[in-house]
Image (cartoon, rainbow, N blue to C red; front, top):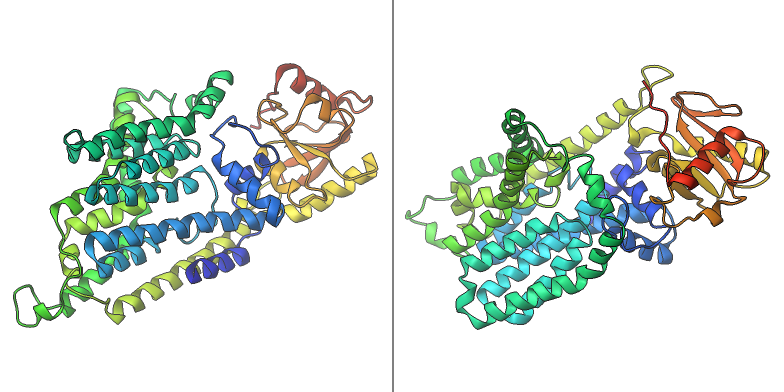
Length: 499
């Protein structure tokens, strides 16, 4: 918790606006549905429920992201302590706390981050079922799998890991495992079935959205090996580099501080838990199988693998690699970590904090008047002030609806009075919290890239313009009205593409 408070404070100082994924969840939480055009509904339900109690502020979404991460870390540490002992668990946890998922992205709240604690809980329960078979444990695992599918369909990888471990346990030989597997499947289907029905009714909207990007990329055969290799190098190298640096330091310290196995004094440092092959295989299941399965999809189906798909699984790769290296046996021969390892951890955290400040400073610079700062450094508060002034002057009241891309429109709406709703890309299909009736006569602002300047448009920031209008049927203000009428008639509109 102290770690989270420190990094949330640093992020609050370094960034002017929340991550775009957090803005998206804030926009979607204006209305509850069984699904949305890009993703399943669970993160949005969580955001909406918490905001009812704490208010519709961006800070609430940021804290939710940090809570997902901290909950994951606690279960991660608890499981590793059962597998390899306290020192191993603590060292792995400190390594994971050096990743950008834990530092610069600690406040991210999206479908990947919601999947993190669900995956950790399933891994913890699966190990419990391994040692104490009980059908009710399997039933809870099924409930969590179904819940995870409501967060992101990538939970199917977790379900595959559970199935592989059931086979590893030869679950068909034990009645508790055998009946438990049936209960697991039924529980998952019971939780997921309402959303599955929504998928059918909505013509598989999220899957169609995915097919337009990664799933439907259909990379040519000659391009697949290089793409998959690049993706794996990003996962095991770039994403986990801070953890590898920290563990290299720890390995050097332990190699010089601990007595060699079998020498006098080694018995005074008793291992809490003796590493066994089963424990190592369990960690390899969670740390290596998910990236290998996704790599297989890239090779076999030509899927364009996204770097962010590692969010929910990359932290498990760290202890999996530790268990396969001499470091794993070294650390099990000690009860407490040497002070020099803690000093190295704090130095690395300080360097990461400095890097955050440097990145924020560089992100504020604008090369020219037509160039925007990095997303996190855009001053949407000042933009909202301009939009509010224009709306009050033209419409005699505050904005009720803002229409445009969810990121820019949502970030502006967060700073406007009464937190207006967002009509994403002018599409009612993408905005189930709005209807044609609710738009009639509404005080509205349209936001778009400044490719063409409609009559009455005003600048809101470099490269972006806005204009005001009443509802979808009021006369006078034809540029906005034409777009809104087309949105209602065809369920959306295509924005002019900027060169």
